[in-house]
Amino acid sequence: MTPTLQAFLIVSTALFSIGLLAALSRRHAIFILIGIEMMLAAANLNFIAFWRFGPHHQPPIGVMIALFSIAIAAAEAAVGLAMVIAVYRHYRTTNVDQLDQLRG
Amino acid sequence: MNSGAFILIAIFTLAAALAAATLRKLMHAALSFALAFVGLASSFFLLGAEFVGLALVFVYIGAVAVLIVFTILLTRRDVEKDRGFNWGGVPIAVAVFGGLTWSILKTQSIAIVAPRMPALTVKQIGAALMTSYVWPLQCVGLLLTAALIGALILVIEEKR
Image (cartoon, rainbow over all chains, first blue to last red; front, side):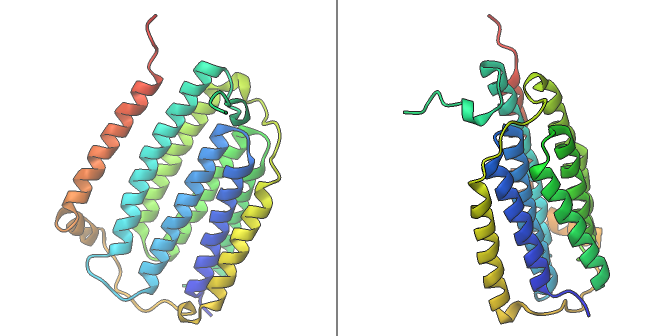
């Protein structure tokens, strides 16, 4: 017995939910970034799974989208971590609950 | 594709991801994050996308995980341990997982096994990148340059 497309989709759903959990419930800014990266990676797994189980294409579209999305995720991580450092310089904290200066 | 390898990889990936999301010590969470990406890359290998799996290892474990560790060390005074966990996120995450899993299991047309496919070579990927995807490739290069310069400007020391 070999794994079906459903099995891969369920794994990627679980990874997405864990990323959502990290992004929603942790108070630390770096954890929120880790959660967002996990959600993006779950989307990549979906692209690759649909490419593998779908009809054969030339050029390989799913692989291309996954490659570009990895590049964009790297840019996002760099900017996000730079923002964490900039926020830490100004407020001396990285706890997102204390960053409430703009709250009405 | 072999079922035992898939189950092993899935358990490993999800356990490492759960550890990254819930561990109290930031450094342990960052290392579990890297482990989760090792698992994810091996599932890409299982799916026959070796090049993307290797790119994932290079980008996430080689660059992003190291960046996260550096950021943790630079903001160290604050991060000895993470205070508090907002339990309100748990029902939302469980609801998203339940709803998506229910709809995946209800959809009969995706309960298929992988068709036979000729192996994807790096030569094919390179040819596609240099012909039909050359404009997206240039745009991503520009985006990466702009993002890295922007990140540098964000953290540059201000002269008083």
